[in-house]
Length: 235
Image (cartoon, rainbow, N blue to C red; front, top):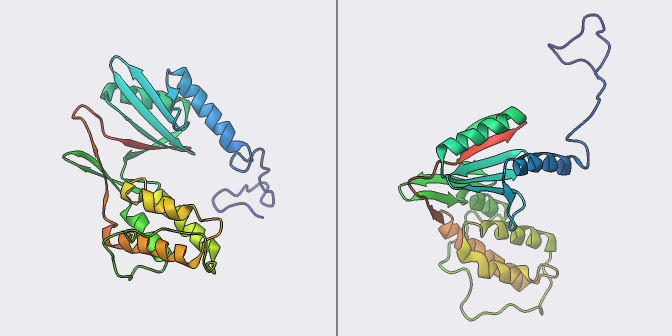
């Protein structure tokens, strides 16, 4: 170990820093950070969503605010620009924050603004998934499942169950913006414990369908009074 360039102590050039506390290295660090942050938001009048504990909502007669926290990244949006700016100032006084401007890409989801509101797309995520499966050059297909076909447990076990589980799990995340895949992905995921060759063929058919439709997404309407979504990082 040695002192980093630009921070060399001329009086003690052979000394190194003694680490007092490693926040990110502690096993309980994520829980401690979430408790610290959520306690502050609850004190401001927010409440945690029952559907997602990382989503905090604030309601009042003047409008509504939404804050979604993922580790130390957060998405903030609301229906009142003044309320939104007040919240950002309060958070900046309490935490070290960086404004990453309007939200464009978050956790594999691309956010595109249009006249109707915002369009959520996982095109890049879908293309990466096809690359992982070595099916970028596969022939697209118009349906994700053969009509009238049923999956069964009898058959030859798939040679790489880990690969099957990995791809099936990745397809589950893709259903966030592709609800048309939900039924078919749910069907193959019921056999993740012991996939057979036929299950893998069904999974590849879904991927072939994705290949032809990976630019699809989810359109969310947005009222004219709504503010744009902001993306922030808490150091």
